Image (cartoon, rainbow, N blue to C red; front, side, top):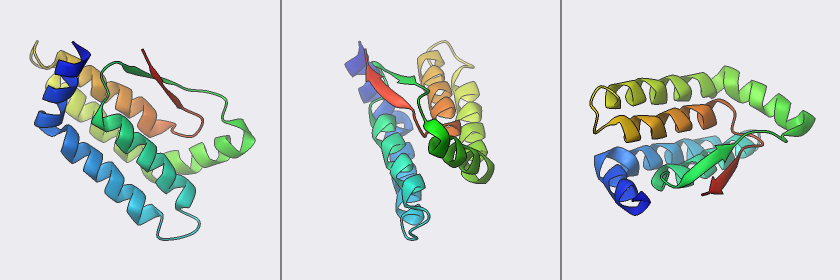
Length: 122
């Protein structure tokens, strides 16, 4: 069932969302200061391509991760999270779209606090 969900996900916008996260990562990696943030964008882009059957575990980010998460949240994280929350709410309007909306809610969580997050296969 996860394979079917992931294929449909790719067809209804997963490729576009992953490309957007990847592009954000490339832009952030232009500067040395932005490289840690760009790497997180690449991690999220990889997750966006195949979200069904995987979960996000937050935690263990340490003091440096805490600082980076705060900077991320203030500068870009809240925009990414709001975008995924809005798209997830639109998907949840229909019964068929609920699984895809739930995936966007997972992405909103990862978009808020990416440092120290692990992606776990179920």
